[in-house]
Length: 277
Image 1 (tube, one colour):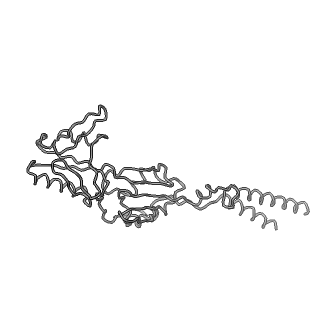
Image 2 (tube, one colour):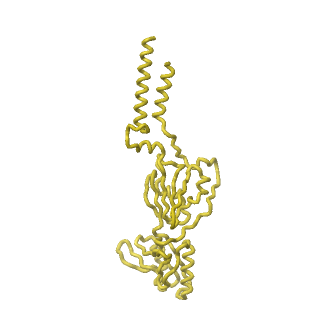
Image 3 (cartoon, one colour):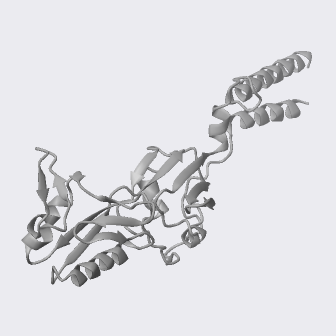
């Protein structure tokens, strides 16, 4: 009888102190040195409402100036045209002018007029504009540089810095996205990261497991696309902590109270039995 009561008290204490084990280690399937290869990255392709900057350079800055939108310096707010010598500097200006891809997939380019860019990668769009410039016979040696301006993704749930972040390059992975968000919290499920992707007509959902590197790298959602939404689901511990009723059977306080009661009852019974003996 004594042994049963002691075991009961220990079991209750164990139930109160132990929750669902936290799976917090990434890439648990990797042992030692391993080579991981992701599927070929699906390049980011321009869509309506995307914004891009287009810089045209050549040996003749006076000619290229008419193909470049003005940019606005942050300090004085003045408008200037881009030249070959200022291209690197101006690419970092927050007030730089850009083009918005319209609903039909075109941008309205200076001198050349409407140019179709929707469905093109950044490199393809650069080549398309370069060919248009050469065909115009107004510039002999154009160099076209396109940068993304408003492409981004959102990350929500159990991360340290949820919010919307900018995609500033091609081949941007879900690991890059998590890094920008300050990593998952201790209460985020590494095996159940949800990614929602809109393809223009419908939404697709993907479940990512950060603990399984091979499956993660093989997922079509490993590389981020513009407009993706990432949601990191909470683990059981976080769900229990968010219970509205503090006396709910799933709450931590309930188990602590139950443990305390069982321990007290067990000790009381043991004392009575000891006194009788």
